[in-house]
Length: 140
Image (cartoon, rainbow, N blue to C red; front, side):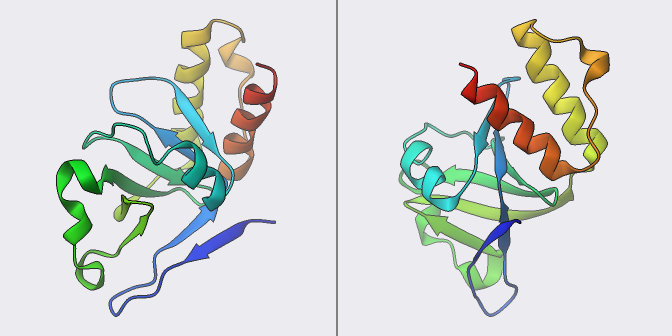
């Protein structure tokens, strides 16, 4: 069952459906994030860039910026459909990733590690695709 984190504002209710994957701009590495608490503990201290994004289990994408670096901590959440977790701003984007697009990202991630046959990587849904990263992290 997916867990969701709700932030209420006057324009829309952004919901993050956990687990998620963190896609850092310019890198094929994907980071698995299973809960809001894990995000808070593991990823809020990253140096973030404008192209970084969080992709949730429903394919929703959120641009990710560090409030202390970009000044985004002063964003009006009621206008931008954003939420903030420990000084990291997550701004809901209109792009919704498909299972095929997420699979492509995971194949690129696995290709950079050269450990799996890429043609064997297939998923029925985005949640299963993201959860495969959890299995990957446990083997390390």
